[in-house]
Length: 252
Image (cartoon, rainbow, N blue to C red):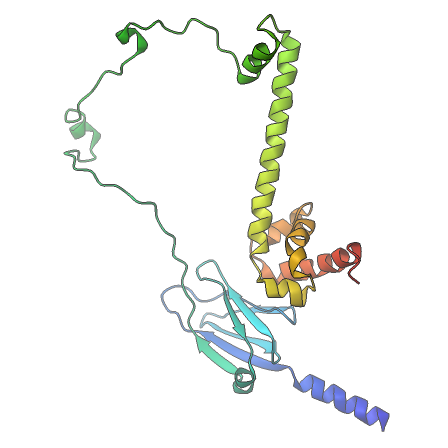
């Protein structure tokens, strides 16, 4: 009897997962090769040339469709959608806003030979035109000026100057690298909704930002997956990272 119930439970569990079909109806740009991922099952596929894809789903799963041309779309699998087994839908194309261009009233045509005689030429004003003396002091880097102001402006050993400049440059490069990493981690974090972190990866809401740094800070492979938007492989990598992170934080 126990074996029968166990087998029956396995059959019912297997029936919970069905092959769902979706079709992207946009016809303005290429709709093939779009990434489709079941975030709960960790399975993915791509659309064919006709925009059609097939992927296993269960009630409560969420499908995410993404590409370079379209805005990312998420589709929750409700009971009615699960029973229907298919869905036709449109994606929102991405729009790149161009910078504002100011058009001025000008007789210029764009041809350099024709416009050369039209545009008035003006001589730039220099200090000597106003009776001001030219530069007489030798140029000093900011680090040298600050040092001389602090220590009285006397002679400064060249070795000290070079070390000061070198140390400052190293510190600036370090700060720039940290700022760049922070921007990249924040962008990568937004590739998935917070619900993916809390439900699929089991990361508490207040620790999502900390987990993102843990996952991306010293892992170039994971950052490369994010830059290329290989979302299925990225999600798989984050699941492994999440296990290690939870153990490290004593969450399991």
